[in-house]
Image (cartoon, rainbow over all chains, first blue to last red; front, top):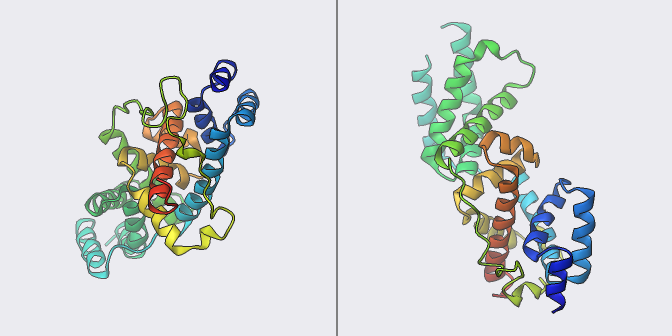
Length: 89
Length: 183
């Protein structure tokens, strides 16, 4: 019952979780932010998910900004260079 | 050999490795990666005279690479279908499963310094379908400039948020299954 009320008054969890993504990059408008915070105040489900998003976000940032591990071996690399250099002579 | 060819030959030697590894990171496929990096150098060759050295060569080549990846994506996934969320939400938009309520207990420890965790995380990311993974990776690579990613890939902003939302839900599931032992 309470959850239904949240939906009527604010927004469904489906929408709230989308706004969390926007909040992550500051693409959220002030009004959306107010509504999201109100939703989070009442909805422990989304609060729990929001905490998980923060952990994932930090981990993803770390993984995506790390230097990419080398996955082309020396032979492949040399072969690639030779072929291309021949082509663009 | 003229100056242009000479430079290009040099750049192939110096930057192939970085470009190939970045392309592989973005596309998750070696052959596609090689094809695209080859096209990067061909483009660089063709537009050599318009490169005025305002940025470093590496930055310039990386910019061409990102454009090529976006173009690749546009061609391959021209019709971004809708991003379904009914696995996680019911018709009213409420969470379907209560497992979302279970907290991740290792949250405050040094989880991010744990190599095993980072490996599981990376594996989970790689399991995402490419049609979502490429925009997500571009998004982080472009320092989260949503507009830029959308412009390049032809995805609408709304769809980009949905892709991030959906991708993250799947990641959460994968992590809980493979690391947190909740599911």
